[in-house]
Length: 441
Image (cartoon, rainbow, N blue to C red):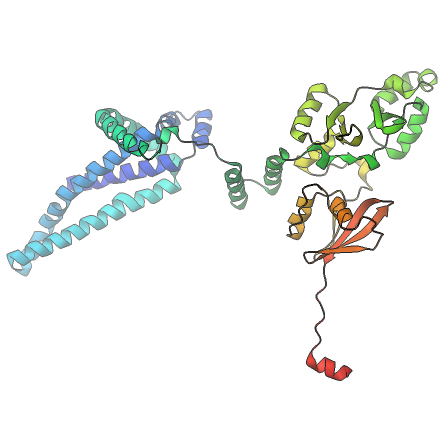
């Protein structure tokens, strides 16, 4: 019985070890090592050579299974023999029954105690099991290395015939979708909060955004004419209350540079009489210029490198299509940033009621699709306002377009510049019953 118990324990050890080193996350082991857990170093060694140590586990499981098959049935049969002797069963019948009962008991104990229970433990406590079993597994691997090498080489050679590489050569990097699933599970499990999930999820979308999708469009740019003096600029700034302004020469297609209100105020305070009458070009700084199709990740790096927090976007004809500030880019990750001058700023989406919204016409189509759970697609248009104009270019306030069960109504318009759209669920048609028709007749 002692040998039988030892073999069951060995089987449980190798099964638990195998599942733990497959289940454990490398990043978790790296974290434990960084925290000073010296036991995790050997676990790192094991999972870094997964192919070798999985072969060691399989060899251990095979040896213990053979041992149980050899000793287990005979051991249980010896235990049961006194019972069968008391019953006075015929010898030939006793041999068959004893074999069947012994085999059943050995199989049950082996499967439950030697495999299923350790497997469940290893899956639930992968890090702990991997750390505690790694030293013994490494020792077993070193002792049985020649056999493991032969078996592993043979297995890899056979797998190579089917174009399959060893475990050590396989890719371990996770895809973006896999990381999103992990984040979602972490949110559900309470490991991260909603804000953390939102920030990381926005970062995944960050590289897919272009400057055109986050820009302030040309029609909304507030520029300063190069002929204005510093005193005249302050009058304009008092109305608009922005921090930075582009300096233009005649029209918005000719942007010369930018000015920062902080620098202007400093210059004015130092010498109001002299600096107050200087042209604004005396205080102008360079501005970044990029194509409107530039990825915002590249634009952010350019802004950081050149330390200029405003970029003018150009279209394919060299004209100005809009501008982007560093705040516009950061808001793609953290959401809207509102300061003391944004008290009257209207949210991009206003919820009026169930399936009833007022949205900024600059809102991206994909964001509208997410909110309404619909699919509006246009390869040439980015915003919901742009899409509406393709459906009804000469729209007036109050006019609507119906699409996929929703009414898109012009809420506010400035010339041909669409500012806000009201979106609501299309009302269900009224079906007149036979009784109603009869009454009307």
